[in-house]
Image 1 (tube, rainbow, N blue to C red):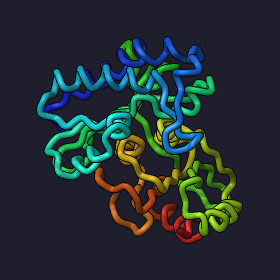
Image 2: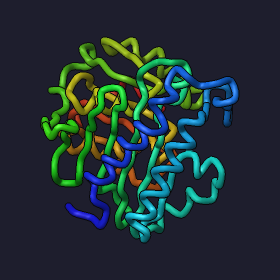
Image 3: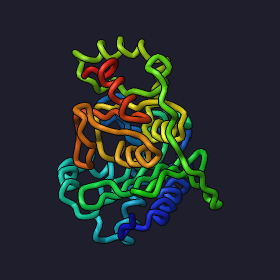
Amino acid sequence: MTSTVDVIVLADLLRRAATAEILPRFRRLGQDDVRAKSEATDLVTEADEQAERMIKAEAQRLWPSALFLGEESVAADPDLLGSLEHADLAIVVDPVDGTFNFAAGIPAFGVMASVISGGETIAGIIYDPMGDDWVMAEKGGGAWLRRPEGGAERLSVAAPVGLEHMVGMASTGYLPKEKRAEVLGNLAKVRFLTNYRCAAHEYRTFAGGHVHYLMYNKLMPWDHLAGTLISQEAGAYAARFDGSAYLPHHLDGGLLITPDKASWEVLRREVFTV
């Protein structure tokens, strides 16, 4: 599927912003360059703000008809979030996903963008500044690992396994408090649980076939639209907890992604009993 947004150009823009505004600040942030937003672990840095400013300016120059929705833009003006549902064309950007890691000097962060057209996600990009490569997908075109020199490798999710052999990632911190202990107890049924505190790298790991599930409860569009499309194009089954499709305007309802529907149903029944 094509759109009026050239996905390769957008991918290169993410890389240029990382080179200019993110990497020079990694492990070089001053005390005044990091601030808390909603809580002590919800951070924003000068890298987030300056990278988004650069991406936004160039995106609006290249694609003036597209709504630009960035995490830091919404932080400054929350009313922007409601405009996504009705936009004919939108570019959604997370300038630094994994800001907690970035601020702590941990090299697990990424830059993400998705393209929304007619109420559905039609393209997703996850750029890794440290590895200097992209995981990306256009709807109907498969999921790919692409490198600046031109190499490309098609991605595929892991083969399904039984519940006791499943390895995956779950963000349990945003589950309802009364359900969190139950879900954490249920996770003893799987082989392994981890969390990178970075959706960008969790989606890359899943789409590359290294783990068997991802679970999220808080659904901000910049965190999950790109990764969900990439996962689906790599062969995954993705749905909200009630079994409905995850759409760009959804902010809640949970999200569970697995290699196939049967794995989804087992995990929903046995583990993620939200």
